[in-house]
Length: 185
Image (tube, rainbow, N blue to C red):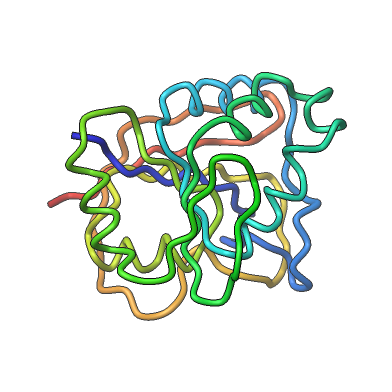
């Protein structure tokens, strides 16, 4: 059975975007790229909400992204992608399926299939909905050494309290720390 994992960059004060939607603050260097390559090697499917999808689709197919991080770009462009959106009309990025409703049903179908991980990148609203529905199997929270002072938080909307178990910690020389959590069921 496939598992759903979240791999999200956040600021020390818990934001996934700055106050004006900016995403120029994450520390991305060699150790982070090695983590990203490894995480993508363990993935069969990538999940996005509309905003993250549009950002990723504008970046990863570019010549610059392919030149800067060829292994990551190859996986980002080549892996199957599902974008959950009720407002997006088309999804042109290679290997992308657009799903407008029944997100939880779609996730349950994906989880029943054998295979590698189902990875959510960014997409705070998707993470929040699937957290509330108890469909996330692992959270990888990548804490960056920056305080944004405001912005979009990792979790939004109403979520019942969830108890988590810390299963691993990775620290990079840059000060970035990855916290690995699993829900306590």
